[in-house]
Length: 278
Image (cartoon, rainbow, N blue to C red; front, side):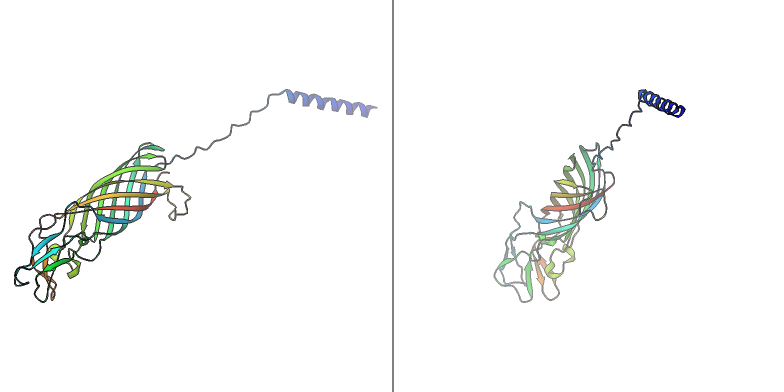
């Protein structure tokens, strides 16, 4: 009997404690932690490669008639040069830095330098000879764009970013050089370093960080399409048609005035690896 009373008392006590605990206020669960989604920014340094197509953008006609003087030709011999298409492959690399004022969408400023190979074709401007050249001589016209072997630029960039898409304009210093006449190894008087300017624009898109193209584990891989107009001043050096001695590949006569500028356009695609802020 006493045992039953003790068991009943213990059960009553446990029920009372449980009821009291149920009446106590419960501890609130901690709020969920939300990790902010990183906002993309174009700020950072980058390097990359590009390839494209370059073509003559000059409005001037480079065709001309050249009276070949004696004793290098029969009296009255005239060489008439015709225009040839000046275009070809262009490729190289670039490095630069961008700064975006507001992450996400906003104004982006930057600077970029690039160096490019040019192949406008190794064939010189052909000529129609009215008369006869003396044996051992030929004429050539070094004024075409095929005299350029390479060019480069140092340009500022100004654009607006729509998240991962950047639309920009660009402009700045340009330079270039090359053999004025590859057909005889490049005469020293015409193998000149030229300077000028370049202007253009483009559009660039940033791929996700985990893109399969991200070999260097950069903060972003970007793809761009860009167009440039390049104008290189050739000054007032003698750059007209030349009469060349085929034996020693040296010019023996030339017309006094040549083309003053090299003007060409480049349309290219590029791939960049950006390092810095995400």
